Length: 211
Length: 211
Image (cartoon, rainbow over all chains, first blue to last red; front, side):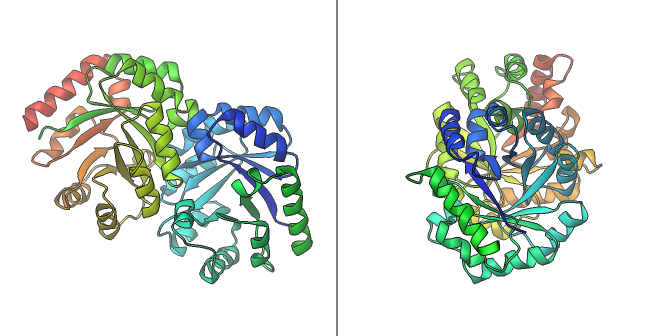
């Protein structure tokens, strides 16, 4: 299956996020209200994205660590289809969240293990996000063979695996032959000279590699 | 030193949070804009708490996992003194956040280790929050000897340790003799029949045990 494309709206203000959504919302498959945006503007950001893009999958990147039921319900009421939970959340938190919203993504940060991943699977979770941390990237780390092997292993465990962190148009081909569920990009799309054109190029590149 | 008392405003709306803050803000030492509140109302919640309680320590419970610098700066600009980071955040994320705000608390969820804790210490972090997960509590777990031992070990490592999760007035004495930095309570204070009176009782109990 062709991977989806998701834009991460990690904008600092609602107006700036809506500008990006206006440029990219029709092109991408998933519109993400980023953590920065959610913390700045609250669920009003999700409500606005839902109002402007009624047909799209909207993800609230809450990186929820606790009170999963309440946070998921709030996201759902605001109009989100999916939300994220952090990998260090407990299984009860993940299960409570999963009851309240269409789907969850587990965000992989820090020292998660395949044993943890098995517990998530057993708890009914189907999506994980393999991350290159923004701060780790700033500190000079990048995508490599060990990342691709971990992604492949998660796919083989049966997860729908999204990948994110420092992706560029030229990086997509690194994942050729892999059953990636979704590519998530933020500034590479939002800060392009022509975001709409850049989004189209990404979709074309994805179609070319996975078509 | 006498432990501080922190109220967690995990209210679902700004108005409800302000009601709780009005009842408890003068009594407690630290006012927390809870994760649920931050995600619902954004940094407007922090701005309102700062406006109404200019002299108090205000904590934004962002449980930040990434983009530490941006999130911390946003919290600081809104008026927060402290914010939280999740234990599975990378060290670069924690360091980036620490540069932008007065202080950070590391929220302990999932399978953190003392080796991780040592890395946080080496990175300049001084505060950790030992948590009983809300969802774990709902699933029947509670405070026990193993929790107290972990808290004590973190204190002996040199951390200022806050404790939270299902605390009641009667639970405080469990920590007698321990150098707890801060007790964090949410619904036990907010949902008391007389929150202000309840807050005073907690401060009296803390003074009685640690005075």
